[in-house]
Length: 332
Ligand SMILES: NC(=O)C1=CN([C@@H]2O[C@H](COP(=O)(O)OP(=O)(O)OC[C@H]3O[C@@H](n4cnc5c(N)ncnc54)[C@H](OP(=O)(O)O)[C@@H]3O)[C@@H](O)[C@H]2O)C=CC1
Ligand SMILES: CC(=O)N[C@@H](CCC(=O)OP(=O)(O)O)C(=O)O
Image (tube, rainbow, N blue to C red; front, top):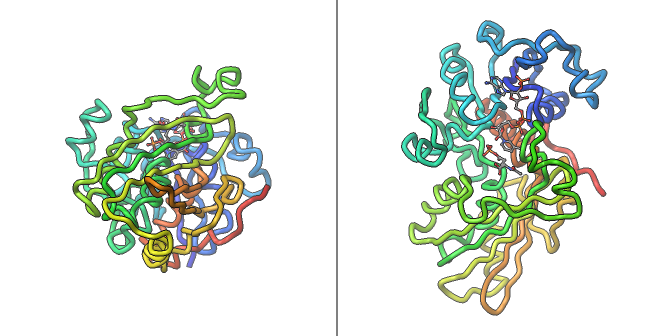
């Protein structure tokens, strides 16, 4: 039987990516896609790469359209998702929220985001590799941020042996969303790499939240940067260990940790171009005199957002988590 899926925020980057990926999903059909600005217009007119694949028109984000759905994705900015998620849950459908609204406890969220949370309900943090069993029972999954996905996966296996970890991340510009800003303006980014929120990015709290259960003492530093490309996040994690472990021991720890994790690949060499368009997170491990370096690569729109959201939906529905996502990356 085919399940019906709705997308709130279908005109943005992650909404478009959900549509691209869900087209080939064997168990679902997208039946509702919302846009306030474009209600009544053909979906393919915004997502031109999807011409011929969808015969849907955008509708307003109203609950009546979701009554026939089994699952909804909310792909809207933080502070906006909370206006829809409680209503969708009330309609009786499962929800994967791609925004930051349900990733942190209410008090931490309100402090970090400077917003009052108007629709708080508990959710499971949707880093699939870490929380698969809880996700399988959840009605609401808070899909992780793009940076946290690359950071946490790179360090979780070894976190309990670490004293301190320093994350240096470089993101493609689609991470900033579809709306042009001075930050994303071509001449401001072209031929450059731009650090921002160098010591105070909101994703720090998600990363710490997920690493602390492995090691309550771990010290974390995180700096985001953007590079002038569309997709991808490369994370260089400098891991300072409490004890000396050989590279062979470290590799074995990672292999054991990710034994049943199809979308995490250990590689000798990592590049954004080896994961582009795919749901893989590649990780390479190096040992230096003073530290371990784990380099991870994801596509921010896939494993960092829409792909992981689909992986989570698959787990919530009791399906094989690879459904709709089992294809090779686009190279070069
Ligand atoms: N881009 C990325 O790499 C990642 C993004 N995320 C998160 O996923 C969410 C979506 O991101 P992204 O697709 O990049 O964002 P975009 O800005 O590209 O798109 C967001 C869409 O949400 C819709 N929207 C905005 N406000 C509202 C509202 N109040 N009610 C209903 N719809 C609204 C807009 O459509 P319209 O105005 O037409 O209604 C817009 O197209 C965000 O929370 C983002 O932080 C998470 C991980 C990675
Ligand atoms: C390049 C860029 O601007 N990236 C975004 C993060 C994208 C993301 O994951 O955002 P959410 O936590 O809102 O889901 C940022 O730094 O805010």
